[in-house]
Image 1 (spheres, one colour):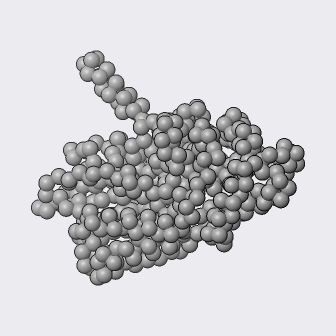
Image 2 (cartoon, rainbow, N blue to C red):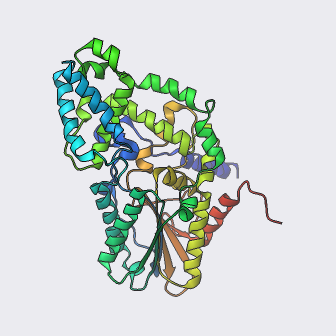
Image 3 (cartoon, one colour):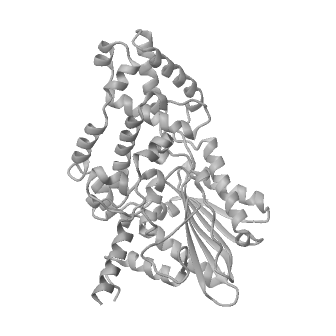
Length: 431
């Protein structure tokens, strides 16, 4: 008995700590990953899907998707750097590389002016591609007269993502009717953040000081300033080196999301890119995911959404219909949802900042157009219902839930029971 207990403990220990750890090499090999949440949708990384158990056919899909690729949030995110380089150019304070970067940025400005925060053409293509592949994989779900809804937050890039996705489905089957809505009514659960979560993020004494020290260690801008500026006096009087380095890093990462064929990655050393990415990843991990420092606060943010997803699924099952519920939101919504769902490697919790990137990586969790799909299967002869989970269209496991159809197919009753227990956790029991 002791041996059995030991083996069981060792097995659970190996599951708990067998993270798909991110390595510096992953970022060095594909520097676009340093973009984190700017990582363009990795459709090229979609693997082969397994066949469902015999006798089961798909009938319903529950989905949450992040908006597709976008421009940087504000025009100033480009213009401030452009103006600084223009000033340096007028004072002969740029190196040849600095001049080249300035002229590249002028070319970028032609596309990005007045587009701050907008969905880009690539973002439209990403959403259309996801919809097209979904239709091809699950034609049974999209039969004539399917019951389909699509809801979005009120942010325009999410609304347009919903529209691009829905239109591609209708092109695949013109008889589909997709009810679409974008309103505060849906935003209440699609983009919900608790008062406690907001207070933790904004407080001065929760995470900011430790992060400041981490940033000081990992962002070293002097070498980049030397590569770009030829006049140290100009740098001393006019340049905030750290701000400029971070701004150029953001611009470099965003280029994969837009149409202009220009790159800025060459101005950075790969280690600089990796260290800059670590800082962005740190912030998201602490403020939206399951870093030990926040004490699990962020799980609460997506409980209203998960509750709605369960209710929508139950409604479809009870009515004996087929179709889908599509929802479109933001990175700050998909991050807590996938960890509340307990998808593999999305809810690891560590407390050492040096290990954050090993336990959790934003580009794996919330790239542009990132999405979660729950695909429901019904048995042809029984009432049994199975569910398969997809993250960015790849099959993924839910380690805490046991089942007879692993690794990818779970009994809906087991799934529902587990998630309802999480939703009700910490809440007063009804009398």
